[in-house]
Image 1: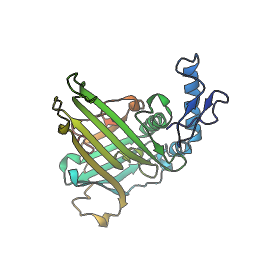
Image 2: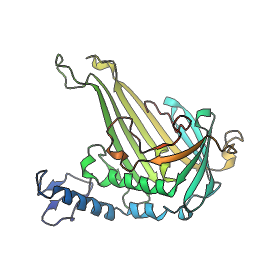
Image 3: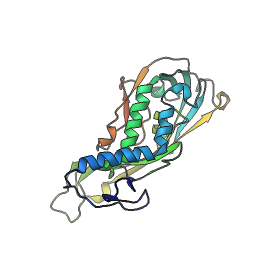
Image 4: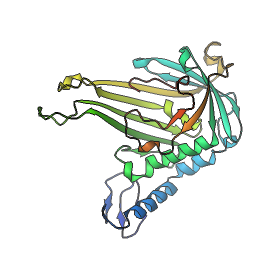
Length: 277
């Protein structure tokens, strides 16, 4: 996944997103941490998506405007439609009202410049931190305005028993999300753009047939006010107030339920309850 080609002459040989990396050093090399740090910095520099992402950290420069409305749709596995509208925007923060026929998704979100920057750090780790590449097996769009990445995580609830022939944990949760970040939208909207697969067996038995698989596909699109009813597009509320909190190191979490961001009001601010998430 990581692209180190040409970064360290005579130290690193690699392939850029298309093949297996090959190294002329190993984990025991005396300067391995410095090598990785340098390679990560070069990876970030060469992925022009990040410079484009940084260019809209002052929201005055962002493509979206006050009055823009978005429709978020989750498929029939957990059918949900949410609408969002840009209410206010200045250089340092954007305020977005969410509404839905499901009342639990109604909220008023504040997203600050610092949150956008922290999300940028999160995404740089996703793409370029080789220590976590097993959890992010692919990324594309590194030279475009849309970054697509895969995030795989698992939690072992009960280890594999010695009395069976398989090598599968007796109880586990596994998640795989394929998500896209489009800098023409508020950047945390990536959460609403992709698919989420959840596999789990929490029966704590050796029965392999107990595994359940649930998939949610989520899309987001820009619409006009005429594309939704007056009740669905009622954005007059300013509560519950939800301030986004981004964890720039969130990509280091390996728990199946890990997320890049939360809010300061988790009891009242629901974003999207996909199957298994």
